[in-house]
Amino acid sequence: VKTIGVLTSGGDAPGMNAAIRAVVRQAITKGLEVKGIKRGYAGLLQEEIIDMHAQDVSDIIQRGGTILQTARCMDFTTPEGQQKGAEICKKHGIDGVVVIGGDGSFKGAQKLAEHGINTIGLPGTIDLDIASTEYTIGFDTAVNTAMEAIDKVRDTSTSHERCSIIEVMGRGAGYIALWCGIANGAEDILLPEKYNYDEQMIVNHIIENRKRGKKHHIIINAEGIGHSTSMAKRIEAATGVETRATILGHMQRGGSPTCKDRVYASTMGAKAVDLLLEGKTNRVVGYRHGEFVDFDIDEALAMQKGIPEYQWEICRNLSK
Ligand code: ATP
Image 1 (cartoon, rainbow, N blue to C red):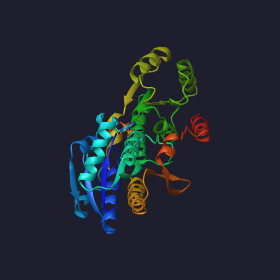
Image 2 (cartoon, helix red, strand yellow):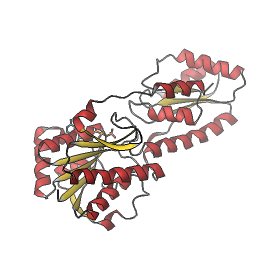
Image 3 (cartoon, rainbow, N blue to C red):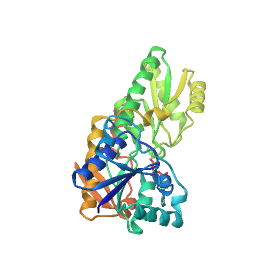
Image 4 (cartoon, rainbow, N blue to C red):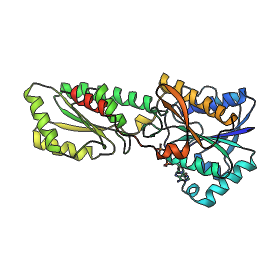
């Protein structure tokens, strides 16, 4: 491997810049050249390819978003698009690509590998919904952003003795909701993996808590369940307790990455380069049992994970 390309794909996540910086600087340190591919696979097909030097990634480790921009690209899901993508890599002398994104982006990397381009995937998503790893780039920042926002809603909710439904991101996965459930001491936590759509149970819980003198009632609702505003209206009607919905939305994707996201993303970025130098391809980097590891992409995509049962149990026990 002589020249490495790096791209970010799918949803953005804080820490992606730290990963890009690490790929560029580790590669240069090891005597390789680096090219930045802008706008994910869409930019690859449009040949939006730039040379990257050590200074091109200065002053970005602390910034959210991704300096390479990101996109979703339908054309790259077709065999013609994938063939074209691989040819463009070869034309620009790119013989290894680091793809930072989620499962969908890994499938794209798998296709490039099939066409002879060495590829390494890095898990970049705020949702933590990648089965092969216990850590994804951006989750720590997003969950801290959500936690701080929920604390603020809780202050005003308590003053006004309201019930608050706060919707957090995560798409079909409830990890942000679970972590905030524990970190914010929420009274109810609705996760796509666990919720049985029994609103009466929530209504009873609110009424019981009021009788015990609780001044607030925080419900964390995962994005995968949604409908927070209509839920608030129904709960207010059933309980007589003023109930408001707050949808945190895209604020959770932005902001300066936490120390953990910077350090882990940097480590993963450097490891991706080292794997390419070892001649590895079709691999994804992950973090498991306290170590940075790598798996075959096919194997990683076949893995499954769910909400850890013990964490879910304590989440409910502690919210009494
Ligand atoms: P996030 O979960 O943060 O949204 P993701 O990587 O899972 O990230 P997707 O939109 O699923 O996001 O995928 C990003 C891009 O990867 C797609 O727009 C497409 O270009 C490419 N991709 C997805 N699936 C495939 C596939 N089966 N084959 C080739 N490329 C794919």
